[in-house]
Length: 558
Image (spheres, rainbow, N blue to C red):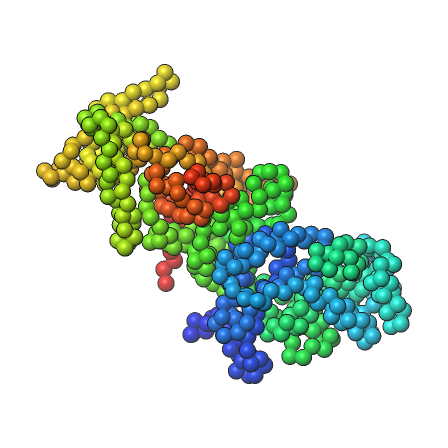
């Protein structure tokens, strides 16, 4: 299939297809939908589909539907529905009052199945699952006709009614479309369109014990809702002939058009629902929204923003060609989004005490610090400075290597936005760990500059010991061991044992005690952080590192 992906005006192939349909009068408006199955949480790949379907409706002044494909009661949960609704709204896909459920159309689907039987286009089969596979054929060999394929219309109607009325056990009968067992497209070899399942449905209760298969239900749902362009991922390309067959044989007027686009893949991440489910059940993660995962709920909890996800989707683009993006590109997007939005604060993750010996005992002064130097309109705040401070342990060395410009005996550094200090001595415990660093300060250098013009090469950040917040900070790595890849030889996940490091007693600016869920900050030198929405309490926020400040992503040149 040779489809041009973009044209000279920069419009991708889906926009070109819609433009053509509107110009030729195939449709006079655009109506799209996002139809998730509520059998798990959505992940980053779904974000592309949500934003594309919503974006096309918005671009053309059309309508956008949110629809749950709740046709399989064996796997669906209300918990998943609630999470999906929150995800879609968070991403900004406004479906207004256009929330629908496939189960709303069970009656119409049943009537369409009866119509197909009456037209001689569907029949009841008694083949077992193993027999069905045997009769189906292979990619190189045609299938064989089902022995039940030539039942009379009357007999098929009677048996289908027995399936519907609960007289048939699960798996004993199915309803199959009668198409072509010799078709080169296996999806067209008399696919099952209804199965028996004596399960209680979350919305319809025990009204139904037969349920439609996705390939039968989906085109009917689209047609009933008046969808014009059914945008779906590339694995449904081989299903499109069946999609078209169903909408045509069921005789829907002005039926929808299916267009496929390539999925968005990320390297070295877990998106498969069965794998995430196992991680949750084995308590390797603390839920479907664990910040180490790439479900949309996980990304939101970790601190990603809708704007960063949209930037990432836009950078990946819309095409027919399968491609894989690096996680570093997603990290680039959140850095770009947050760097001019959030305040920069000081936080010490591995604290060691610094004592200024010549600073007046008991004195506390409050220094004015800009919230974000690149954004003056964000204003400033006052933070306490006193005799005792905390600094990062890595900012002091007893015997430093060359080109180490932070604290060591005899060296002078700048305390960020405060004073110059010179290291005079240090104290160790019985294990040889430095427990205290003693310095003297130059009162004339307040604000971080020297009136005599002397320069220092090192600047370190700090937090007041007297006025600091003890907080839990979580530092994340990929849950997958990137050097070894996602899967082990046995198909299990290759997990990184160091995917989370919990710092229980970080020292933060005291003002952060009032931070609320999803509040975001740049911790000087440590990265961007967000307040955890699940484990934080009033006055005791827990901070998740969204991303470090260092980037391995190189923006491609135009």
